[in-house]
Length: 462
Image (cartoon, rainbow, N blue to C red; front, side):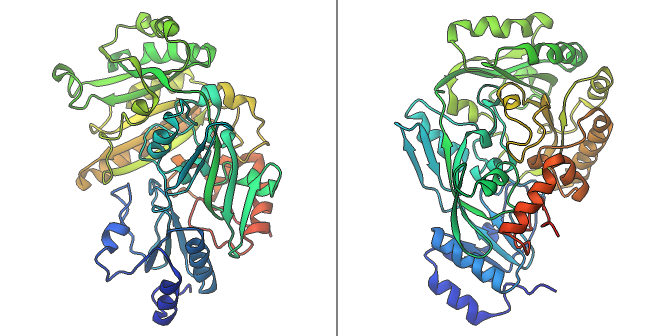
C-alpha cells in the first residue's frame, strides 16, 4: 500500500526548509483553498500540497514523492474534469505560482511557465500583435490543455497547440531537468505533444506565435427548432470554408446578461465565430449562415482576440458542477443529426454541446508526427453538463452520458484526452490508436516505474 504524505513529519520539515514556495498541510488555514479546483464536483483531500515557486521546488517535490512512494498529482490550471490535478492522501505538486512569461518579438515565440492561464498568455502576446493556439476559455491552464493536444479558435488556420510547441523543459521522475525539442530528446518531445502528463512535469513551454490581433467573432443563435436544418448545412459548409473561417456549432440555453431580456432562457443552436482573414471579407464569409435560417440573435463583429478568448469566463466561473464526455467526429451523418435533435435541448442553463472544428491545418500534420493520432477527424465534440447547484449533479451527468451514448456509434470511437472523465484504459488506447505502443516505449524510458500516473495513464511497456 502506498504511504501517505503525512507519515514523516521530520522529512516534511526538511522538505519545507528547501522550498522557496509554500508547503501546505491539511491543518493549515490555506488548505481548503489550495485543494479547490475548477470542477465543483471534485472533493479530494491531499496529504500534502507543495506550491512551487521555481524549478528547484519542482525537483525537490518530485524527489520527495518518488522516494516515499507517494501517489502524486500535478496541478497547473486545475481545469481537469475528472479532478486529475488532485489526489486523496498523497502529494500535489502545485505549479500555479509559476507564472513567468517572456515574448521574443524577433523570433515570434513566447516562453511560458506552467502556472499561467491562457488569459495570461494572450495579455502578453497581444501587445505584440500576436497569439498562439489555445482553447476557448481564458482561465484554462496552459499545461493541461497543451499536453493533451490543445484545440481552439485558431486551429483551422494554425493547427493544434502542440503543432505550435517549439520546445519544453521537463522535470523527469528521477529528478533530472531536461530540454525537449525536435533536436534534443526528440522522442520525449514527440510524446509530450498529446500524451498528457505521463512523462514528467513541464516547467516551461516555448510556443510559436502567429499574427493574430483583431478577429471578427461572436455568437449567432437560431431557435432550437432549426437544429436539423442548420446542422445539415454546417456539415457540408464547414469543411469547404476557407481556413480563415472558424465556427464551432453549439446547443445551449441563452443565459442572462449581456443578452437581450426577450431571449433569456430560449433553447438555441448556433455558431461561435472567429474569422482571422481581412475584415472587409468577413461579411461574405458569415452571410451563408444567415441565409440557411434566420438567426434569433447575433452579435458578430471586430474585437481583440483576447476579448473573444475571455467571452465565456463569466458564464463559467470556478466552482460549478461539471460532467463532460467527448468524441472525435469524422462525419455528421443523418442518424447523428437525428440524435442531436433528440438530445439538443439542454437540461440546465449552463449545459451545452460543442462541435469544435479540427480540420484545415490540423490535417496537414501526419498521424504519427505527434502523439495526437486522430488527424483525420473533422470535429472534436464535447457534451457538457454544468450547473452551480450540487443538487443537479445527477441530472446533468445522466444527460451527458445518455447524449454521448446515443452519438458514440456515429463517432470515430475515440476522444480528445482533455474531454475524458475517468473512462478506463480501453478509451485511452482508442484515443492514441497506433501511437499507443510507441507512447508506452517512451514512458518506459522516462518514467519506467509509472510515478506520473495520476492522469489519463499510459502504462510503461513491459
